[in-house]
Image (cartoon, rainbow, N blue to C red; front, top):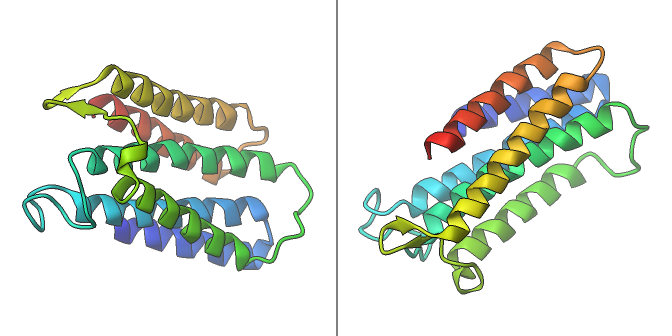
Length: 176
């Protein structure tokens, strides 16, 4: 996942350099963000690299990283949709990936070191009511992203592929 997300981000950044579409820059940042959170999620997974996971993981870290990862990507898709029809913003292109990595680092820090500030999603090996609400919100964000892409006219090939990605996201979240 990390490798494919990074390859996709590089391709989208390359397309941005050619077309100067900040919508493409936004999607490149979205894939860069998912690569960062997927890496942290993998490192924090209990039993994979250590019995409790790395990065100071607790029983809540992996599930929170998953929710932040899956809840944020649809926001990048919605940003992509919004930027397609808007004039360019006056931000330097390199600031976007830097801000993305900073946001990813902040979320990773929150889920690993700031876990006391987050409600428990797993209690005694079972999903808490907070989990149900959180996963519902994450699922709803993906559904909204699919709807926003569906309403785009004219649709590009990228729009169609992002709809496929968001639908896969919906199924992934439902299976979680």
